[in-house]
Image (cartoon, rainbow, N blue to C red):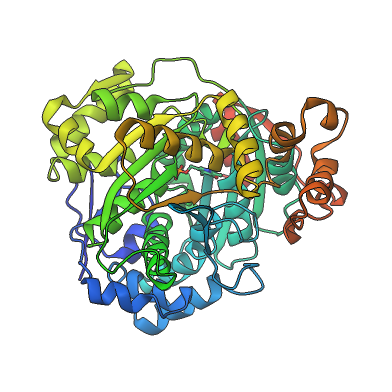
Length: 500
Ligand SMILES: *Cc1c(COP(=O)(O)O)cnc(C)c1O
């Protein structure tokens, strides 16, 4: 069986069901699998004739082996359904020119890539509760930079045995993102705006998770916390699937030969998405380079280039808000693997980050990271120009996050000359961040005075791209959540909500 340990040294050796239920380890570390099974090239090639559902089962069973195949298949079928995903391939691959292929991860119910994981996590969670004999009710606590919140709400709303509380930075998300959340229906959901940025919000949630006094009061009430943030293993593991799926489609479309290496370019924030790509590589997926694309909050670019992770810098609110992050939680999992699972080093660095705001991993670790990763960033003007260029050249409408990736990919090619076939991971529908997209395509004057909701229609009329079903009539929906709190009062909000 695949067992799970903490990155900070608690060798729990727990099952995947336990890891998914708990979310985060008692010692503050993240759960990681003790081993990565590898697939042969033949096994990977076989995936190319399969549906997304079958591909998912083939990958997930290598990690969630305490689930029966039947249980796993049921979770997968419930998650990747045609009434939830508007594209039959679930995660379609589109070629936009000779070497660049776009993996579109935004055909789900919230129009961003978080659906790929958050549509399945609740099903894992319910099964995990059953399997571990848990009697307490699960309370999912989420900090969101915009997309996770709605995706988690969509996933957990109405799921028996669970409640969900979502915190979002009040002024740090787009209007569309905000409306998606504050109009959420369901008896088991609560949505709260926080007066602070995403890092404040995430820090607040982490603090509540590790607050023993709150935990004791929860226990007394028959409640327990879990997490739907990308620190939860059940969030991360479904993301490994689409790296294999993209590779299988590259073979299916005859864009590569079996075994040929490819690059992935990933617009990155919390480092969950790109980490799943690294895990896929550990499982034998032929990967040349993982290109980590950041916006003005370029803490990861600096880290991957210098070995120093330094969060002591100005937080920048950008047009790609889901990547406005200065503390990339999942980097901890990469450091754990790269150091051959040296939990002492990892714990030391995380403590330094917490106490001093920075750490340095030294040249040996840096060299090893550089073998697999390349990093770059795109400022907001460059991102807007990229949206315009890609549309003019290829008639492809890209959202701001995806455009950060495309711009960084251009920089990668210029800097390295590497022409390896490449998959760009596209993380959101352009309709979700439509004000920036319209500004880039049609100019400031054309969009002046129009709300984000009017711009959805405008973008569709101008480009001929259809409005995604979940975004139709969003502003007409009833607002159900109006709570707002100070960043230091998040714990109070939780205890009040739960009646502790
Ligand atoms: C969450 C998100 C990202 C960042 O992904 P991470 O896994 O946090 O690195 C990028 N783009 C969009 C649209 C997102 O929602």
